[in-house]
Image (tube, rainbow, N blue to C red; front, side, top):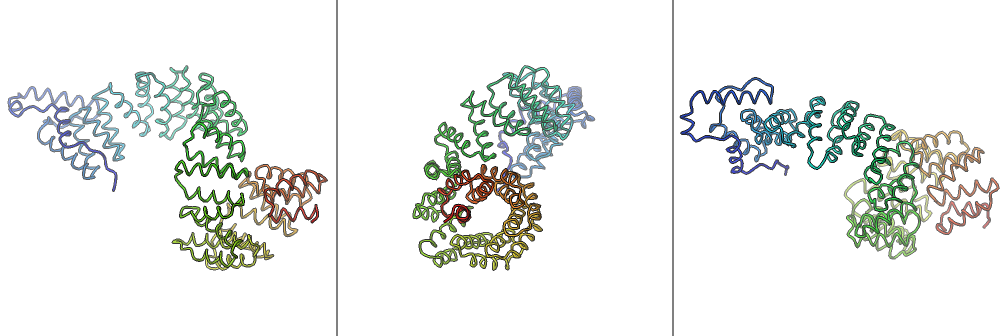
Length: 589
């Protein structure tokens, strides 16, 4: 059902019209003399000229049954969904009566119908009939800005500011939002600068100037305005948020430092703390982000979203016990997507080696984005307990409605086979699926990885090149091809070109940084390689990154550090084959 405008009941509409237009009894009308009628018409014409700036209406337009009929007809049309007819009729009524209440009604209907030109005309009538109405003044100003007429809007906005009940601050804070509809951002900045000039002592003035300056493409000026706002009101959380966002444009570390400093002085600034925590996540500083979300959850103990986020961060920093606690907390608080929580609980219980419990959580996932992934993880647990055939039969028994999910099930089966080191079967499953869908990006990628595992390097390269042709902005495709060439061939210069392209697309991806470090090492540039690998490991302490970092350290003669990194990561990932190979190579069996 379409949402329709909420029209007044017909009885109320009739009352509105009668009060707005002062309809005289019929007997009085009959005795009204021609001179009085002429005076009334002259007054009406003058009002219309003043409001609309148009020629006078036709004579003899006083209220009569025809106007009442039009009014009721407009209401009925609106109730039946014919908004355009209702708007046209109200426009006529506003022109004829010149009454503020009728014009307001006409403006509201025109706005609902998205007829800004009509709304502008009726708002002029409304404001002309009731120039002391703050609502009429602001509505007309807004419509003038939308029409591009900043010059006419400026005195109206200045009056709105000067007459605002309770002070100009709330209105000042809305200035940019009101003016942002205008395409000329330089003109908007000048307008706001002129309007806020009388209020230079208000931090709100500099706040909206910062918004307008940033929109005008001047982030440095925007930051200066934001800093001035904070000088005037150092404890202002909203101003601090704006300043931190502007700082991030120039220096992300400086922005983080500023938010941290503000929070030390104002620990109850929860909105800024939330933004600080999210910024830490964006920088992959997960442990610090976890602490900020913990503070937020302590202050908002019934917030299921915070509990879920804290669980994710705990899992990210390899604290599965804390993650398990917070995910269960999120469930008890009524998190809106329980399937997502079940899936995460399955993963953390796997890490805790509580495999039966993990299996129960995976089986609990009944839908959503995690459904296929959960069934794939369950199948892997099933394979380890009851054998690969049982696991494959389970996956084949699942019914899904869309081909996208069917592909995901195929990928899950191939992943399960790869995990149990049946690389050939994994490749064959994916190859058959790709034969049926030769241009499927995800299958091209997975087939390439499976082909590399079975020493089909020509297949891996051809599939990745095709993926790059289909998705030229796929950083992962460039990275996979570059790493394969660097790790499995001596085509190091060519490999580096692909990895450089990947790094250009995703400069902070730890796995691409790892590839870059590895190819630099292969090229004999140990210092450069070590720099990239340290950065990758700092962002993501992954066992395969640790294997590469340790090898480069060992070759450079820093054997103690290599041994320490390997031993630390091996405690958390004892079954990672790449890590075990590196340790056997240099430490022995």
